[in-house]
Image 1 (cartoon, rainbow over the protein chains, first blue to last red):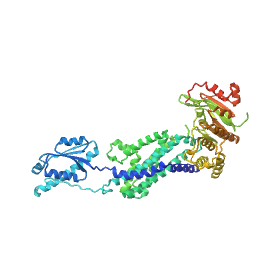
Image 2 (image 1 turned 90 degrees about the vertical axis):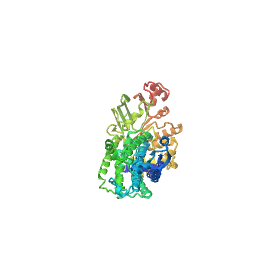
Image 3 (image 1 turned 60 degrees about the vertical axis):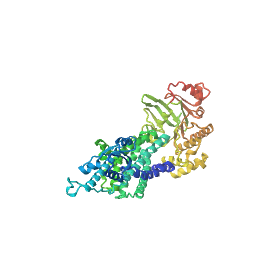
Image 4 (image 1 turned 30 degrees about the horizontal axis):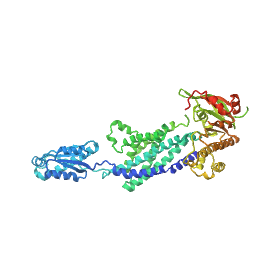
Amino acid sequence: MRTLKFLLQKEFRQIFRDPAIIRILFLMPLIQLMILPRAADYEVKNIRLSVVDHDHSDYSRQLISKVTASGYFQLDNYSNSYALGMDAVEKDKADLILEIPANFEKTLVKEDQATLFMAINAINGVKANLGGAYLRTIIQDFNQEVRMEWIQFPRFSPELKIAITSSNWYNPSMNYRLFMVPGILVVLVTMVGSFLTSLNIVKEKEIGTIEQINVTPIRKYHFILGKLIPFWVLGIVVLTLGLLLARFAYNVIPQASLLTIYVFSAVYLLAVLGLGLLLSTYTANQQQAMLLSFFIMMVFILLGGLYTSIDSMPAWAQWLTKINPVAYFVEVMRMVILKGSTLSDIKPQLAVVSAIALVLNGWAILSYKKRA
Amino acid sequence: MAQPIAIKATGLTKRFGDFTAVDGISFEVYQGEIFGFLGANGAGKTTAMRMLCGLSIPTGGTATVAGFDVYEQTEQIKRSIGYMSQKFSLYEDLTVKENIRFYAGIYGKSDAFIKEKTAFLLKELHMEAEGNKLVRSLPLGWKQKLAFSVAIFHEPGIVFLDEPTGGVDPVTRREFWNMIYQAAARGITVFVTTHYMDEAEYCNRVSIMVDGRIDALDTPRELKRSLQAASMDEVFLKLARKATRNAD
């Protein structure tokens, strides 16, 4: 135990003496939490609309003003030929063309029927899908209004309409920040855990001190604990900073107890620290360790359900997420913060992440050799 | 000679795949002697030393260090030896005192021992003013002297030095060897590799490794006599020229 004391003392001294680490630890949560939830969300706004109006009627103008008034679209181009509209798309000045045919108003009023044409620039798939959907909804709304205005009541409602209203549980205003903040906390804790640990150990390999350590009677588990404990503490510190920022900048207050978050994070950190440790045993220098952890973290985070829903991934990818600790942490953070889940609700996730932590650390200890 | 034996190797061998880095070397090192372990680059010196320190498992042969077996009792060996590697191995981002404290601490020394001996050591090294400076800020010669002091701080019976004076100026090298003599006078066995042949003259006995084998082992005086050489430099050149292995 005395050996461990000396190891920890040395490790903390080195960490606090390195201004870069301290800066990273404090600035990373600050920047990620202040910028990402405000900027990187799923809402699509500022869709650039090019209107090709062959009708120039009251109705066509009403429709256009309704579309632009929605806030999702900005009218960038108004012309009366499809070629001109398409030109704007090709020059990347428009995302969407709405073509209003000649006699749009006339046919609509007379025949209670009209056709609109919509062309979408689908290079950005998400923008195309959502933009199209928004526009369709707005046009339907418009259609409804027009019918109300023109068609007298007895003749109205030839077909039954089902109107759907919904309420969003756990995130009533569909606030994307509420959704993103817990996820970003996960990314933060994960980066601190895996990157810093693997880089730290590999650095000792690079400068040769690990060889010196290996000729001392230090036990393997002492050395490994001496590395794990400081970074575990740092991970918890970063998590705490992140939670405080979430509380004061976004008013994200966990619905359930903080204890649940900390218990799960404590175990989760062991898993990512184990991963960092494992990577360090397989790499010889800091560049290798950096590239390898970057690659693995990229896959883990992108497949972790933070940016895209796991349920909509193909079956094989869903299977992969079963061994992805990031996916469990994202899920648990959202459950606890948004839904107010308690320790007993997250038992299955806790069990799996504990198992992952055991496997990764066990593997790392086995592959860390004091002698070759 | 009836001197007690500190290190004994018999047919010690290390192979990496097809390559035999150390090819069945046998030798004895007596307690309290300064044993020079010479050889050209790539002759296998460092590999042999790493096996003796318990850092590398031998492929064949036997060896004992301080009476402990290099296969089975590496932990006991590690308690009995000090080691200074080719690479500088103190922590540059810790101070002189912190480095001493760390290495002494992991050898299980008490706080009182560490405190007392640190003060003594810094005085000896004329580094009292540098005790709280980061090791990074010291000149190379000082660092090497400090590294040697740290390697024997826990009072081991044997110390292994792998090219300890590489890149150090002649004055500091001389001071360094004075420290080695002092350690030997206290009964510490010194096992040292070097490329400087003037340093080889300082050793009680030297062995010269060529292509993984020990080609000569005797006192510097005897080696010069038997090979009819005027200096150790000439001895080394006569033997090392036979090498067929390329330097690494």
